[in-house]
Length: 119
Image 1 (cartoon, rainbow, N blue to C red):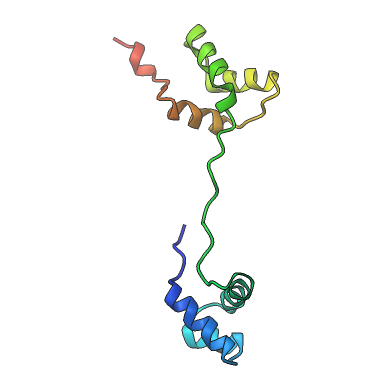
Image 2 (image 1 turned 180 degrees about the vertical axis):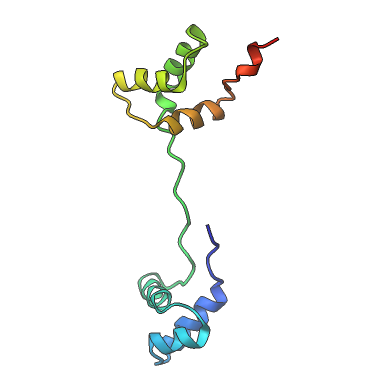
């Protein structure tokens, strides 16, 4: 993911547009996309600031409410697979992807290593 363009550049483009220059010519002069210039002016008129909004979203921990169940199932059945755990969660009405289950277990510090049982 790329970083937002600097506030100096944003302020320059918005200042030029508010001074009467068209969005298209201001964007060409500053070397930015016309759509960016339009959005920056809209943001400035709505909020009074050209600063970028927060990028990304908050991490949603969908499996956190089911943490106790998951840990209990893994303790009861250590050979339980990710897909098996996903099926058990689905039976409880929790529909998540294989990756969501894997990321939850990784955050909890749980790993499924085949080499751990080999001599």
